[in-house]
Image (cartoon, rainbow, N blue to C red; front, side, top):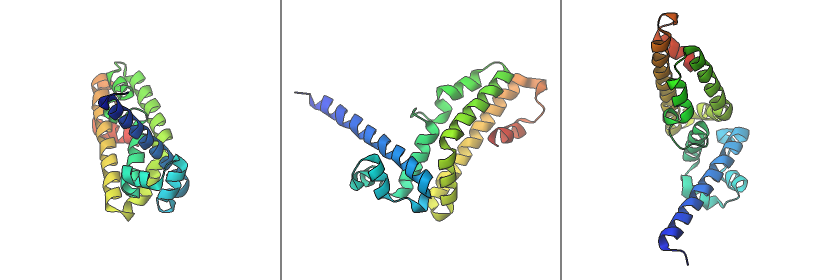
Length: 174
């Protein structure tokens, strides 16, 4: 018979798997239907769970969208973006040309994965103050990462950098 600690660990892992499955289903439904057209019932059906399970995990559709955006931006790694291996790899790259290639590669991968869902959030932000705050927070985090990357790049490129670090950050953000 499994110990209480082992049973608790199994339940925790099962809950995490269910949460991931709900978020993956939410991404598919939200991208197809938009925020206004998405129903929790549709997400539950897509995830293969009961409607109360979705509500227990996320409380409401706003939290579900925010969770889906966060998971999609981070990918399969639960760490914050600026702590993920691909982000630190681009910062640690000593060659500024190679660093620019890594920045482009990483941005492409993230926005291929999350771009459509970010558009859902952007479009829904005027409808709800929590979504507006989430959109603002994501934009601020993106700008912060761009500034950090631009400063890092500027120290390596030195006199070869044609833009100021602030203009470089805005270019990277775009």
